[in-house]
Length: 257
Image (cartoon, rainbow, N blue to C red):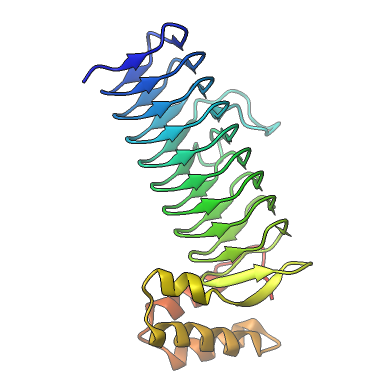
């Protein structure tokens, strides 16, 4: 089906649009923008230079995608902001495009990005994430699949956030958040395993118990490396425990305790 482009929208002739997209009034679509099929842009959405938008996305008023990075090292290099499929991007969300560091900012599939949240340059957001109102990610943050992050949270640059976490509203962190946990309190720290979230995602009781025991072992040690080795030895066949251990071993900013 043909695209429905409101007469008060501005679409650069160099932009490439798929089929059956709805472009509302006062939207601006820049050159070097590629859009797939079945996307709906409400009024006042801006897709800047470098946007790559997949299929079946819904973008609400005031959202600004592939904005110029808020990085003084950026000198105009040609970079992109790549959005997957089936995302809901709510009002006034801003997502910066990449810099020379990685060349692109990426958002996967089936994410809910709530009102007024920001994703900085070169971030990598996975699939199935829910990110709350006014939460802000600095540059080069990586968020794994199925993370739930509450409203008004702040994330330091270069952080890694594990999958299946629950992050308490109004919190901030300058350290990595390992997978499957609840991160909360002030200052931010480990507040247990995300039991409800894991059950909702279909994790078995046996798997949840292995995750819980692995964290008990890891956090009981003064030197986290010793706990990682013990947990891995106790659960050699658990991919979930291996994910936890590898995450901690590869952390560059340190993991919350």
